[in-house]
Length: 553
Image (cartoon, rainbow, N blue to C red; front, side, top):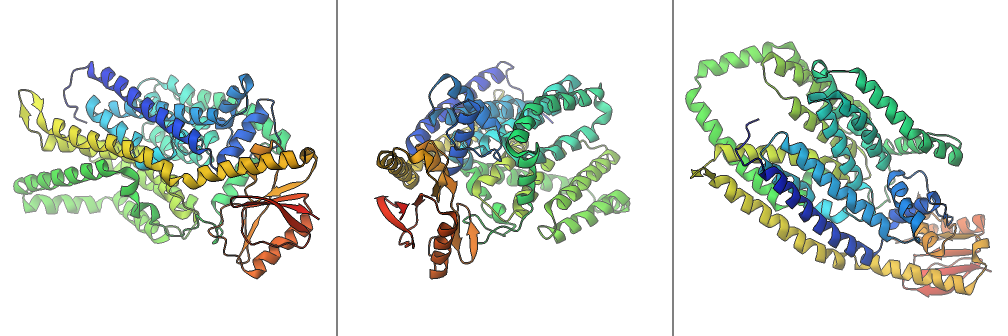
């Protein structure tokens, strides 16, 4: 790829500028999240971290990926239990991921173009929404960036990088289980560049090192569940399931992420797409003028004679025709084969598309999975964003060359686009972070109410830890009560949902199901977040906001 000439020192200046920029964003995000308080899932990670630090409180769920909890537990070993460390850990991953993406992009593009490309990811509205939130969506993607970047270096420069790339790939998987899908771009890139790898045996050593690193975690799972791979089995079972229609995230629309893509990326991405299309139109016009009709017909004829190209077309049709109607893993393998055949075709025409195949397979690995998975949330698009940032950066780099206007060795086009792109990015972040506090007022209030209700129960019954307690949103109350709180399911329209019901418009039949479940479980206390509930052997003893504490009578 053509690189725009810029002073070599600029790459380090821009890296420092990126680190400062992302660090400032992280500071304000962590500060904001601490003020708003965690969300449901985060409390499970905190509970796991407390147990790993030897300060278990009864709240734990080891089906959750362990990396975030392991790192948070280090804070707990040397300090008190609090919510701040997990947000700091998540924020640090975010900073490191943005650095990795910049270094990765810089291997293909000019430093300034790479800086803009990394900012596209760093300031994407959906990334800002979840960076430093104590979730694992951004963290896992940031680890994956380094895993794939190191794989690239292992192939292109020194195969010893496999000693890092495979353990870090495993770390990405252990940060969020769907990151297992990065195996597709990694294997594809290794396969199509096999002859360029100086010492392929280092792949085996890298994999072996990964196995050694994961052994303590597998041992922990074995102690907890009697099966070292139970959490993985649990995840992959649910990833291929049909979903629960009454869950808030149920959405079978396979085009869900495509329809919302621009809102995920922000206005700067739209500007790049516009200039890329303009550049493409100009480039096509130039080529049409110099290409004769005979040459076009000849090249088309030769192209369709190629058997591999015909197979690609057949597989593409099959992929589109069966998309989301068959198990997603079949679609993943079909697309993998398409990418490999595309590589073979590119070799026939002496065209290097290896890097593009790496990133398109990265994007599609997650797009296929998340589109087929009927439970959809906006945050599930985050694993696709680094690949999209690459293609947007590629489009920007190409547009700058096609529309280049120079004045005294200064590329005015690049200067103009930099202002047009970076300005909206910073304005977007500056406006989004304050607005998030207003949007999340409900979550902040619920955290306060959950803590207040828990404190009341601790004072009401000092012996509460010896009692059986069930709750609708058990992780909140398990954390605040510092004890084991069991999961109370939600019954709605003849379906059972464990946290995440789309509404609370319960029928009389639903309310009977709640009552029957309590009669079956017989807890001493039930902490409910649903209004207008009446139970046979339970009476409300305290109410804080939407939270009602029931006691068995």
